[in-house]
Image (cartoon, rainbow, N blue to C red; front, side, top):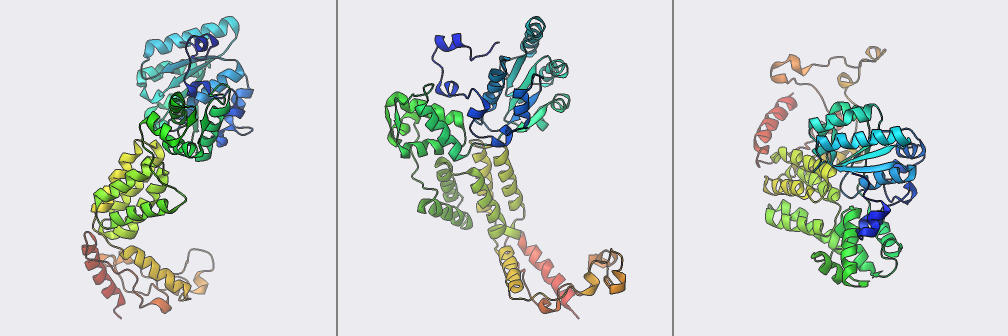
Length: 433
């Protein structure tokens, strides 16, 4: 299957705006600056005649297909695209055989681009190995899944892994503005109101292809593209939400307070509002992670694990699927027993330090591993808790100035109740003279 971008195909059927606007050179690529600078592997691939194998890993709409096409276009390599969704081993071998034949007869190299390569099974990936190993093709595999989990080791070890990032809002704005003015796009035939531009940026969620698809749909309805036109085109109402203004702070405040109040339904409502308004899901995830310790803490220690896992999942898979992980964490946080003992404890400790209640570290707790420490008396008299019953032994741990201070005061909520009981016994034992 040869390139989908040859001129005959373009003349036969009008191509989607997202395809027409694909960059032709690396300098036209918007975003992914960490991959496009001088001396980077992609630059070397474009500037070199030698074939190379790459895996491009990143969220949808970040430019994986675009980069593969640019490499082919700039280097005059033949471009062959295979979708792992529909292709089998037979298709892979046929593409490789054609590439070898082209290389032998004309010396022209082939870029073999496999989209969603993580969907290939082991046999299909094995079929790629000879071409990669013998450099019969420049292999580029695109994946939205972690290749360390979805790609066989022999193929991954023979390829360079490049990680793409979600486009920033400024990147998506630049993509849309170029599409409005560029002759390959709308060619200035339509105008895009500033509010409509911002709405498209929010709806895109860092996905350039999605933003162009929505823009094209809106342009089919009207030459003057407003928020209302965009809403009608994509059947998605604008959520009035200014991320730099009161709405941003009001919604996130209501979101946190709903979780604190154990109202999972209300918290999910505010989560949905933020997602639909295009709020950065990583920002939402960070707030949930903070909440898990600040408002739940030791009352349910697993809440922090869920929150961190959701944050990692969002980073890995992005939206829209990442909203499920966020909802999971929100429900856990909302339904968990609550305790602010952790945040109060560190706040009280920091407060004392800032007041100057610091003092000297007790001599028996000081570092004694280096030469000369023994002469200073460091470590003298230290009692190793593991040598004592229950792993507890009375000795001074805090500086004298804060010896009697109490920072962690656990509640009797949820899993913190047994912690409170144990901590009371430990503190009583350690403080007895």
